[in-house]
Image (cartoon, rainbow, N blue to C red; front, side, top):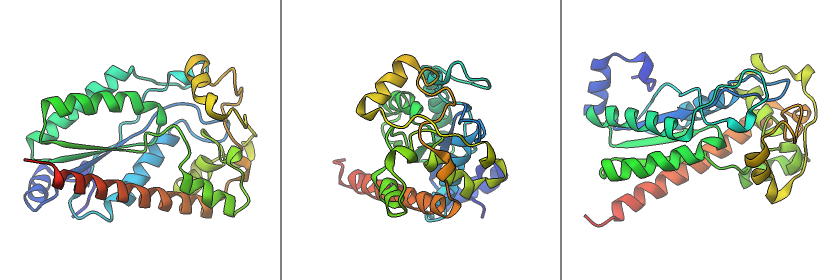
Length: 256
């Protein structure tokens, strides 16, 4: 049985749910600039790849088609941007969740490849907790910081944290080299803004990326490597599996 919802017939989905496949992983991406060397769909490709890898270790999971447009207003001023209001994305997630609950899904895993989706995810989770209290929702990948495990892997290869970067730097470029190398234009990679510290996210929210990095890059994609990107993805999957395990344990301990 394939785990890809879009490739299944309705009867196959019904049979899978009856046999215990009551978790759906919904990848959430974005359509926004990723420097001169990465495609606009980078976050969507990454979210889809992570969802497929995560589902491979779960016996009860189906993977929904990715939502390719997220909340990306901080990328105003760059060509190609498509963005939704936080409330709009939350509405879409809730609409999908209601449909899923109707055909037997009990747990929704929202796997975001774009940190800017975080506010929408929080809003959707709060709405669903009120409307569908028995419907479990787990959020993965909505952080606006680089995971410690990735920074550790990078450091072991001599890559500094500010080169890994938050956006289109060595980190995302390495992962895209592992996932969709045909879409990476390494010959066009340019160094981006490196630094900013804890205040960077606040600056991005207030001013957007364009005044901070004219190339759209935070980090340095020129240092990317496909093998390291594969290790980054594996580390993220390990972290996601721990989160799902902890969420399941917490649910089992919840008073009835």
